[in-house]
Every structure is written in structure tokens, then in C-alpha cells.
Image 1 (cartoon, one colour):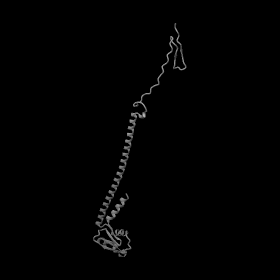
Image 2 (cartoon, one colour):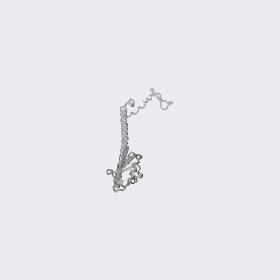
Image 3 (cartoon, helix red, strand yellow):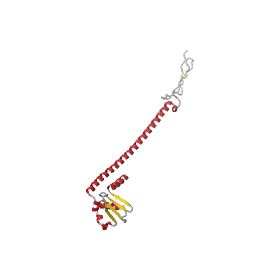
Length: 202
């Protein structure tokens, strides 16, 4: 005797119920297991934060950050050192230039003095400008300068100034003897004052 096969379609197309065949009950569709997650390389299980590979990677990153920070500080410090060195070199060069200029000026002036290309009266007036001329002042000059000094020749205009020739005084130099002390005026003193003013203004 042949029995017919009856197939029932359920509401869900994914499940098919089969009627009994030859007196046997219909087989159930096997349950599908949920998909297993793909393993992450280097992660053996548990929390990724505690994985040795992740911890090692973070340590390497921290070391690289520290190394970069130290390198940056070294570069900044080197740049600051270069700026300071540059400023010092420029300052030294300026001072050397001032010294060289003063040496040249001193040689030129000494040549003019030896040749007699100067006037003694402006030198005396510049020295007298530093004191109170109401007191008696003795002006000591080189004998050659005394002979060519117009102020010494004009006794009326000299006032309370007394001009004296002194061989110990160099040409283009004058020494003032005052109640407060002695004032000396010469080329070296003037050039030194100019050099100090130039270096102080740098």
C-alpha cells in the first residue's frame, strides 16, 4: 500500500515541516549555532586592556612620546644657546670695532699733534668748562703751547687765570690746578671717555 507525502508550508519560509513518511515522524531542522567571533590577533581572551600585547604596545608608545618630548626640549635649549652665542659674538665684534676706531683716531690725532695741526685754546676752554672759574686757577701748558696760546697773551681776558709753562706737560695737553684739585685734559683721556660712552650705549 502506498501512502502519499504531505508537505505543509509554515508561516516562516525558513522552516519546513514534513509529514510522516512510511509511518516515521518528520525530522526537525537542526538548530544553527550562533557565529563565533573572529579571533583578534594578539588577544588570547579576557579584556583587551589586560592583554600583554596591548600593554606592551602602550608602553612602547609612552616611551616614544617621552623620547620625542626630550628631543624637543633639547632642540629648544640648543636654539636658545645659539641665540645667546650670536648676541655675544655681535657684542664682542662691536666692542672690537669701537677699540679699533679709537686706536685709529688716536694715531691720527697724535700725527696732527706732532705736526702742530691743532689749537690749544679750545682745549683749555673745554677743561675750564668743568670747574668754577670764579676761583683762581693755574693753567699749566707745554712751553710751546703757552707761546701760541691766545688766552695767555690776552691778560685782560684771562681774568683770574694764571698761565704757566711746564716742560712736563705734553703738547695739546693742559693741567688745571684748582682749590678743589687738579684736572688734566689730553687726547687719551678724551678718547677713553668716548669709548666708554660708545660701549655703554650698546
